[in-house]
Image 1: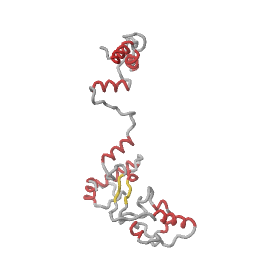
Image 2: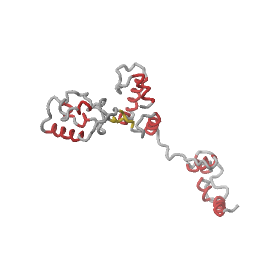
Image 3: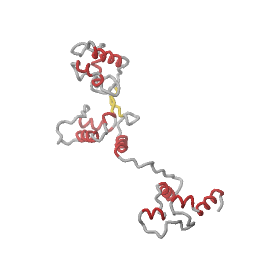
Image 4: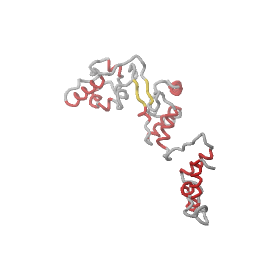
Length: 240
């Protein structure tokens, strides 16, 4: 169990509900967490979908309510069988004590959709085997399965913050001023005459003062101007 979950459990107890307590005005760390989960859910971030129950001995896993076999609770997959269930909160361990899985029903499923759903339920649970380990929740955003603030923060940022294009890549082996220069070139933010005129800054001319053959844009300065091409050739041949 992670340090964060041990801290919350020590304050509020091991069995916590993700449902509001009913006292919206009360303030406590757990109530604040529940309110934030609800607020983020209204923005499209469903944290509960990032939790999955990993069943061990199944003592603390609800057969119908928890997501333990696949991505959907069984009460949603088999609503007709759930309607027959007398013990809605029955655990997986207690349900498996009855080999037929029908002992807690108010009557045996018969005919049509009830029989079809019961047959599907038996097939779905047939290969599942309980173990001696305790049940636990797995956090899907971290490879360890443990909850981490870092993975949560990254998920929220990726979901809510706008995309700003490709990330800036700095090359550590060259001076920082070269990195900044290349970054400005990639964004076409050099203070060339052409860019200055676009910003409404008065310039006597937007023509290149070196060759006077084209507008002084970033592309022209670095690749098309006669002086840029001259120095480029010199660098290629190793001249001085």
